[in-house]
Structure formats: C-alpha cells, structure tokens
Length: 256
Image (cartoon, rainbow, N blue to C red):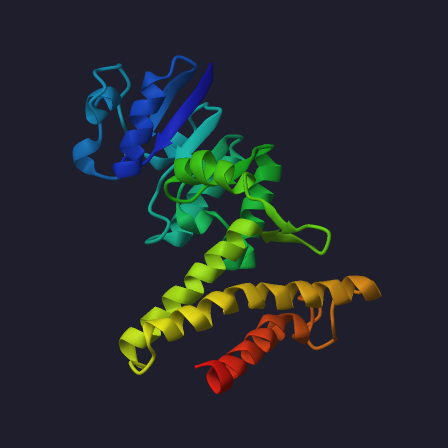
C-alpha cells in the first residue's frame, strides 16, 4: 500500500484527491489545504467522495512531518515560485517522493540554476525522487507520448529526428501563414499565390534541410561551421531558407 499526501485542493487537486481515495492500492495519509474554510474538514467530504475519517490541515510542518511515500504537490508555483520550491525541497529532504503538476516544475533550471540545484540536493539528502509533470499531465503522459511514438521517420539515414508528420505539419503551417498574410498586410496576394508559393515551399524547405544534413554526413562533421557550434553551424540555420528563396524567386519572376 502506497501512502499518499495530497498537497493543495484546487481544481486539479480535487480531481487528484478523488482518484487517490478511490484507489485500493493507495492510502491517503494527509491533505494540505490553504483555505481556512477547508481546514479541519473530512478529506472525502471535501471532494465529494464521502467521509473517510481523515481531516485536512493548514499546518505545513505537520504535513511535512507525516510519514508518506509520495506527495502529490499542486501548490500554485506560478504565483509563489520561491515558496512552492521551498515546500518541495523540504518534502524531498524529509524522505518523500514528490510529483508536481505546476508548469514551472517541468524544467526548473530554465528559471534559475539554484532552483534545480535545490531539488537535486534535497533528493540526495532524503534519498527521494522528484517528477515535474506540468499541468494536465494525463494529456502528455497518456495521450501525447503514444501519438508521438507512432511518428514515421522521414529519412532516418540522413536526419533521424525528422518525421513525415512533421513535414506535413510544416506544409500546412506554411499555407496558414501565407493565408494569414493575405488576410492582413498583403491583400494583393491571391489564394492561388498562397497555394503555389506555400505548398511547394513546404516540400522544398525540408529538402534543403536534408541536403545540408547529407553534406555534413558526407564530410563526417556535426557542424557546417564554427559560428554556431553545437547547433549545426550557420548553414544549418538557413538551409531551408536558401532553397525556398530560390523557389519563390522563380515563381514570382516567371510563373506568376
């Protein structure tokens, strides 16, 4: 039986609380609330699951000192970043694993190195683990990941990261941009212009990218130059642009 603490009972917290109570393999051992009107209330009654005999509490330290295996942390990290990170670090240091849904917990180092270092040090201290899922984790973990895993490689021998679905998405995105431009600041473009410029460009652009990747592989190098090391070089930034520019020049001068 896994002992669980539910930290915060907002919209997502309430959904989480109901699911924890309904699971036979989970034991709810604590619920942290922020609203005084929710304090001292039966946790099951609070979320509409029926009375379970466990009262909620406002006492932060009481929850941190409660024996548990995992904490489902759903504090408002977007509005109180320092306070929420302090909560998580104290929980981790106390030996509890933490799963957090706040978006700022997904990649703490992007905010500041000290936030990520604090979580790592707390995990070492408590021999615990941390998982930052962001908002609506079910979508990313249960829906998006399986969809992404089905993507088809475009040309794996040359560029393993590119997919057929990504190429099709690029074509459609290019067409939408052209139609948006026509509707706003270049009304002299026709719908035919948008189709004949954007659709071929959506194919020619990735072709230019693949050609540049093929050249780098032929010479056994990762970067095409030294200007932007680690990111393919300057040519890698403009390869698609070079090919598309040539197509647009030919279209505008000879075909339109």
